[in-house]
Image 1 (spheres, each protein chain N blue to C red):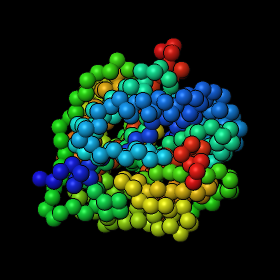
Image 2: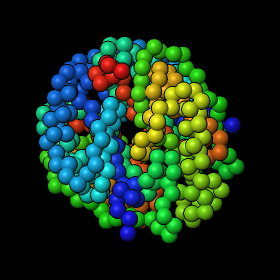
Image 3: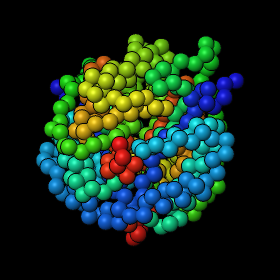
Image 4: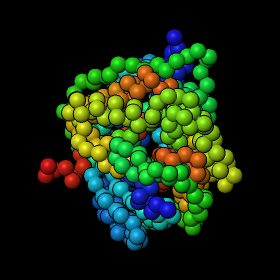
Length: 199
Length: 199
């Protein structure tokens, strides 16, 4: 059995805080979250997180919830990837099949999140599936847990508690990962937007 | 010949301004750009842009350059998609082959941008290509125009004038689109980051 890092499981994320004191908010949020067991590499464009899927998602929930607790408007851009451990190469040891997982559950935050979500099963020739099949599985999951709130161009709209939105994104990615080796997903999450005040 | 809209050509983007007066900066930038010939739909998570590829890229260049001219730290998250006009369905009229295009050139801005870029050729079973082939084509383009600055986990790092970074992202997407119908690309661009001051 490959470890998550050997299988290329990880995330990149960019936390954007729409306020003059964004440095304090971002550093405070990163400092408040439990990073044990994870590889964290913060750069000037985005932060890499490597490790077990559930630990990655728990960490992201903590960081974003802490930043959101300031009440500042923020957006989080998250990329999750699995099954392609190299930068340019997706080669795994011979005989390794797709490794997916069960749906993820995260403790509710009380923070309302709205998101645009895209899920990408990256098939190669010879695979017998259509790539939209996996995407429909993920959307069905979102319908069942109540976060689905419509399909826009190129993205599915999710609406709900931050924890439920993150869990939906991660669960779609893990469930499609059972059938497809290389799966990525991108989500843009908006929190504390002034346009939500009257909703 | 299908129109760009019929072929599903479009973008979603989120402009994040790390400043208390973000509303003024974002509305000013959107108002200053020439949106003629484009369908623009601004929502609370992201903005949709539909239309011809070159017009979309020229518009994005203008919006982001205008916001960057304030000197505020900002990030732009852009998704480009082609070949999948429906939200959940990628069906095109029978007989339509992949429609790509030539590389895009954009007028330089004098604004330095750093980015993390991911390119996704979305193949279906029966296609005779490997999905990483198209990605390597895109990276080769970035090496040739000088914006390539390394491969990080799950993303290629681009560094250069904002116009060159946007042109690289769009050109990789258009060149891969010659062979693959449904191609998406995501880029996170950082501008005016305080961590760049000493570089």
